[in-house]
Length: 139
Image (tube, rainbow, N blue to C red; front, side):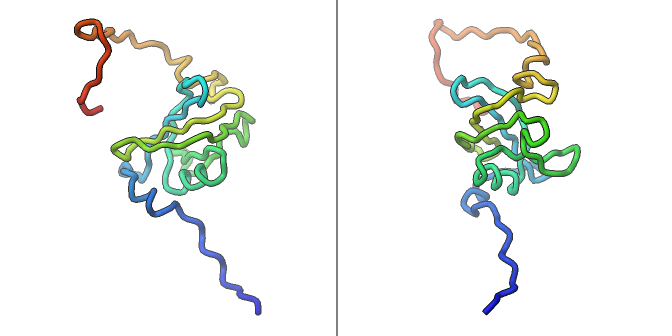
């Protein structure tokens, strides 16, 4: 017997989806970091489908706000991002995607998107007593 009913479209695990706090466009910020050096490479945006693809395909997929479409990093440039881990922050409004970056992460050809932006000259804060510590202030 041949069942011609199409298979249901895959969806993000409901337990994961329930933890996300999305913006008004349904997106969550995804910070991308080189897994071994901890170098911050870029920031992208994901909706549930982009996150599902990232979690299940081993390559990073983003949702392009300007083009209103999905794009998998490296499909046109060859500068791919291979997933090593994906974590969600305590508030559910940001993701940390650790990757093995092949080539440049930035569309300008730079290794990171923060290389060409430059330092903004922030005053460097001094920790009282010279010791490091933790802060309970909300980010």
